[in-house]
Image 1: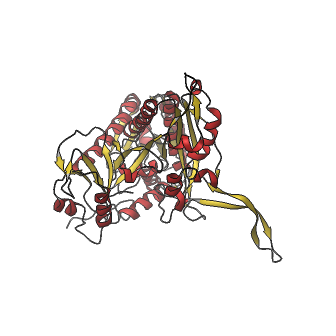
Image 2: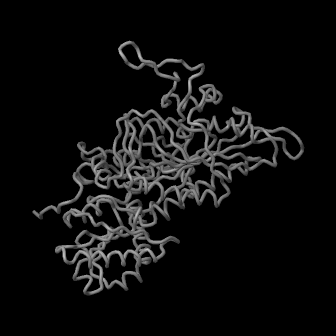
Image 3: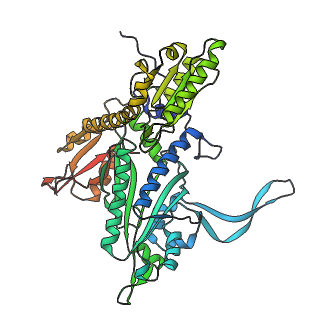
Length: 507
């Protein structure tokens, strides 16, 4: 029997995928659980990754005409009650503030005091509070379109939490827009879905499928919900972003009206759309391996780390001077329109420990520099998209000249690899027997190991959705936007169908 290669992360993906996920986060020092149940502390390397996601998306929002604003964390309970379907959808997840101060009893124990006249909801999403402000801001067709984005935190009281994927408090952006016509609002809804898909594929290197959610999976109160769906390495789907056409439902509830060109007062049309720190979990599960995090260069907090190799004190000054000059030279190179980001790790710890720390953090390139490399004016290069032992000596000038190309090559390779994995685990299924077999684990001790995406005909019946969810914990992820119309029969009910949808297990 061949000796199993030692990995930096234990257990491996194949041994225990959920625990592997947690250990990758720990190994990369991205985040950790907080003293508050269900909440997380995002550490500097993880937050730098979120900042890069923010910067790219914020630029894209502004390029498409949106402006940033900020709205209150607290929402009066009466605001949620205005939209019945909305409040029903979020009621079980709401955190509620009922008092406005604390008082100490005779024993010095603090107790809530000063009950509020009206309870305040810690925002699970901001449609209602933003709608109240939009009703003031919009008076005439000349005020439209109103295109607003908010970067904020939200709270949804989750029972089962997992870092980045599902936490009680998380960070996100939520776009909210107002339009004069249904056509304009629908165009905005689809535009923002395209923005998310472009970001996912070209920055996260995470291939996604754009599509519409079924009625049972819509955002509470929306007329239509659209999403991007990605496949993780355990073959489950991750809903990575959503864009909602709200019709006139929230405009009616909030009183968002305007005078049209004829002077008639009419209801506006609204949209909302958002992505969150869940993207970091998606990026991790798309690319990482059994040695830790793997980062696409376009989002990596740093692109290159220089590791000085100093065995003797008399060589320290020479090595550090070379490393500092090399770092300056690397920063003069542009990648994705900005200087390449580089770090020098001069910590006084063992070289192997230092190298593995950066492997687990997923930095795209590691350069080891010692006296021999200086003598040859070269770098000893390790790339994160290759094996840890696959390192090469490269002339310094050649490395600098090819640095941009190498980073882009890594970016493209990660997307191609993720797309190939998704395609390999996507199957067209036309029989109920094959469908059930596809989603039934062969190994009962590893229920997370299952099929993938099943492209199947669906009759449109909610009863079919409910049945497969009850039997297999499988849902319809979306009705693909670009899928061709084709006659067929529902894989479960046998009734007529015009299009295939994506069934999958999901996060």
